[in-house]
Image 1 (tube, helix red, strand yellow):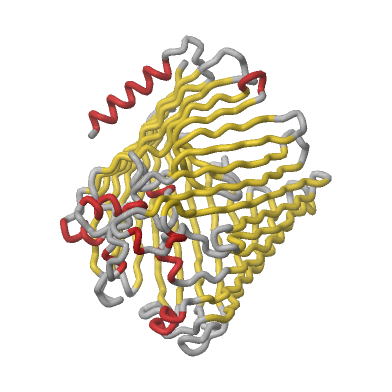
Image 2 (cartoon, one colour; image 1 turned 120 degrees about the vertical axis):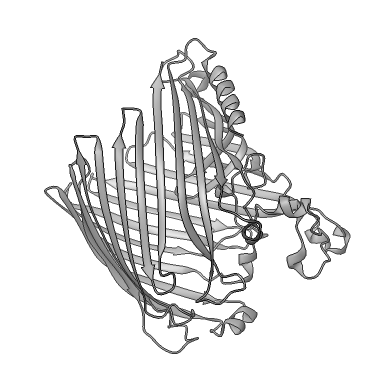
Length: 506
């Protein structure tokens, strides 16, 4: 596997180095060694989970070739790619059966695309390959083509199309897969799990259309070159083709091509007089006809660069892929309200303010009855956040913060009985001679959930020691040791080692 990565890296480098006009190349490599345990409660009581050990080596390879044309900043062609190889030496066969993604080793192509900016005198931008779309409204990955047109009317028009990246895609990673698309389906289908859609129970079905290519397409309108204004409207749809045995037994409306996801949204950010920001965004889930996310806020620089106030309100409604099992459980929205003040004093930033969270319960009757809780209602949690931190760039690093969120207590099953959580964190660190670094992080937490066995007044103490050594301008070594202690886990010791290599050349 390592030889295949090396060969692929060499071929990509040769491809990128072919044009004589290439300005800059970059090569990055990071190797992580990890040792830790996590717990599985599958078929076991809360106070006796099974400990699963993980001894992992994770390797990243990043390659880039930038400015492959000589037309200047107005027009340029870039190529970037990132590969990740994972191998876990700690699994035994029983542990692999407990996990969906336990096949080892795993090679993932996180992204790889060729980008041409400013084509035809700055009119077009093209991006071809595996790419990640991430902004205030969207987070997904796809293999395909994205075309963006810059018009003279301060408006950018973009369209894209391709195939969703799933854990079952070629060199795909479940990191960017939509909810409901399981990495395990390829393995389950290969091992002979039935795809008979009339089978009972449904848990015995491996839906083979989750393993098939899933087209995705959409577009966006973006406001461009307007000072102090940022605005966009976006749309996307993903689909899958229902397949498997006995498809004809399904209702006609769910046969053939089906919509998995369909979203439309918009966001706007305006800055006035260099001291006031107004912003808002909305994401509409068109598949289930409800708002998936709503957000609005304002930030006022009362004293520029010294004192600012922020007020924000947001609402999130869980939004899943059409095939996700989570659609069977809780789908109620969560509303959050926050008021925050930021004060800069010398080398320190102080911040804090009140928080209010409203949970709108909307459970399926069967699930609520089995859990012994109410089916619907509202729960109000209140609290606040406060802390301080030293500004970046100074030799000493000092920071601390406290967070509390809780509500009224009552009997189990009461919708107002969601318990409380309290977190206290602190860190102190020092950089020596711009080469060595050492950080100590401490945390104290208290969680109490009367609706969960074993989580009543649970205290947890954690500590982490992080050391960094800069070997050269291109190489850094980082070592991390963590320990967390509470009455459930007793000890949760983890260790990490990272070697990071980065270089650029012409």
